[in-house]
Image (cartoon, rainbow, N blue to C red):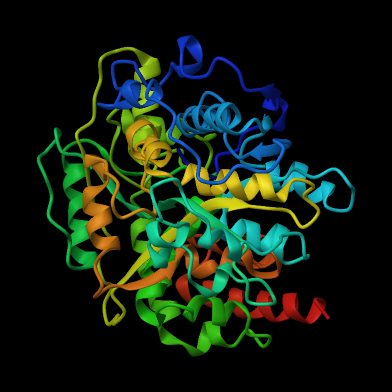
Length: 464
């Protein structure tokens, strides 16, 4: 599921785990669009934990998921197993995507924080790590996962955790991943057949023109989600400036990088070409209306993360009309003159607050969840990717995973991490207004980079 989806904290409920793995608690994700193996996973035996905190104790977990989401179901099962196997009393609140800002950030200055929480690495870094609210999880990588002598470090792909944006001020890792995501152009192979990878933006535009000729809108775009609107320019710009290039420009106190680096203006020009093909009403609807219109067949293409099949499959399942999508995907093509063949990746994982009272139990659960018997639920039930190379890749995501595993590609943190700069304020104050205006045609590419330069310089001046 889309990890940033706005889920109100009113859904929060404290649940002592009981009965998970049978009846309604294991339901969901098992309708007409259910994945093969989902029901089997949710009723499978509990793996044995390698680490058991002395004397049982308690684990308080504030989850970024809701209990009825596929990831929530997988976690419910693992938490119930952990409670049963270790004697640790598990207290979980299913708070949704804004838990880290609406609940955790305000709690950091109090004595009431969870022992464990989860989010994507950029948001944890911006909102929790930067003000000193996380503790080092370096020791977790040496913990056993319950598969002989295998440790967390042994089972995880290094690219999922070993990168600069997952280091605190002392150089320690503050997040241990359990899910990885990327993004792609999505389409239904049942409506027009499988498509090859467009080699140029001109070829991509050709696909859009064909969609319009077929009487369809070309691109579904939920314009009320700022980070959805970020995709186009950032994806194209990364191919001109490479990993770290966007983040460097965003942190330039003079702002001049935006106008001095030609690739930024060219990326904006290519973005402006694409946005002309957005579906009517893209900037006036409320998520997920436009995504659902894509699932209903009103538009040919959708550009979002690897949660697209899971999310749209769940929507179609709730519709109950027997509609299915044969998911196809491809990557952004290289824009004219670009030299960096990039692929983005985002890690979602667990972090432990510095003030956690039961850090040992939290760390023991992290290691336990990365056991193959638990983590297999993410691809099986949630149709998402995991950082363990030895686990299954959902069929819908194999093309994206192949690109992510390509060692010839230049790997970049999603959006080059600019959504975490200055605690996320640079994005909201500087980038989002200019980006929205570019997509709507209210700013030319030249005016777009000029505005970024001006507003960025003003932003950094005001930070001192």
